Amino acid sequence: MTREAVLAIFRRHLARIRQTVRDDFETYRMAGVESAQRLARLTDGVVRQLFAHAVHEVAGSAGLSDSVAIAATGGYGRMMLAPFSDIDLLFLAPDEPAPDTLRVIEYMLYFMWDLGLKVGHATRSIAHCLAMRSDRPYYSHQPDGRAPAGWRRGFVRRFRASI
Figure (cartoon, rainbow, N blue to C red):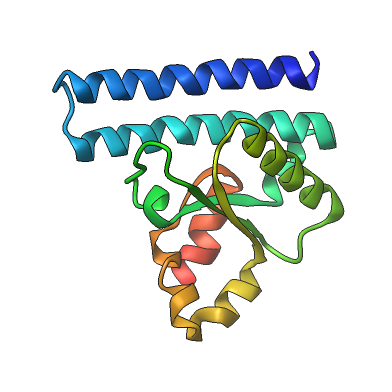
């Protein structure tokens, strides 16, 4: 399947997600907080599927999923994603990211931009994040991180436990 065909599928899915949440909110079936949480949860699914697609397209193997965690940070990380808000992502690698990992991240970012999403992002190693703990503006958002895709168990065990 071509990139454009896959992009069209993701666009339709994203539009359905947004419309469903909007409809439920506007018809009073969900409150604002519940809508933001649902939108974050559904966006997690988009990020997971996009990561799987990017790994397949760029690296050709699922083994790469052990080399990076995709952490949601900011409002998205706190499960409070307002409609059309930016999606803050931290691509976290156990060590310095390998070239294949960087290509997957780049693929994902361009794909998300082509979907019309606003993405705040950073790519870091665990050591780099831990070294920046003294930088309060940077560090203050790290405890809000959750890992919707990639190397999730490693993220929780090696990073969250360290901060």
